[in-house]
Image (tube, rainbow, N blue to C red; front, top):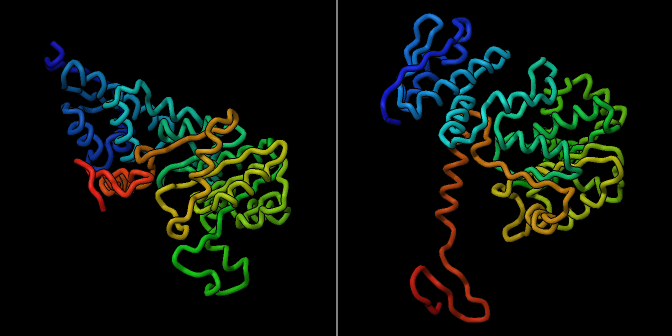
Length: 343
């Protein structure tokens, strides 16, 4: 019977146990609770007690985590929770399959890889398509992975320069009241792009290439009137563009260029009721074959686990707030849940 309890065993090297099971066996307890199994560790042998349906999945998950650890990865709670999600969904995918996709190393030698299926799809799409829209909530690695792909293409001489841009939209504070000249005023908006490049390339390499004009970080308004050939171009925070700005940007693209557009439709800083250029572009361009669209979700959040919970909580809240009425065009009535009412 599928519900009968069985025992399986697997090896977990002693030197990797702290990494695989977490501090105070935090991950081990999480696996036990989520999958309803019992894990008993003696030396380097792990006994797994569970149903015939679940015990093999628990064994496969733990072996997956061990492989990741043996490759030099630091196992995080996000790794474990995502591996559990893959098991529960019967996706047939594993963390080691995702981890095989290497992009590049940071300046400290840390490998940059996609960490979720959504991120892997995003990276694969960047490799295949000329223009890619990466849309999703904060913490899904949209900008960071795009930056890593840009640096890799630049190092491999697939492109001759990197251009990073953002709309310098006012998010509560007016630009005119910020101190300094124009560059000083817009630099805070571009700081996340600088930070990512420092981490991937190193400050010295970044500064040298920027002085030579091979790396450019500029507000979106600076793109007008230019043709961008043989470049890797990233437009970040695209939800804050207007339709006119988005059209202007996309028509700058020249030969040999690759473009990544990233944004989070839930975090617009545009004036109330203004239409987002990102929303319009995703509707207008969806049928063009060489343009890819990758929608990341809260499952792809790779920051602190609390961020994933926050994103999910906001998603649930916004779904509940959606008005449950359908305005009837051309009449003075609207539908509520039951019946039709005149305002």
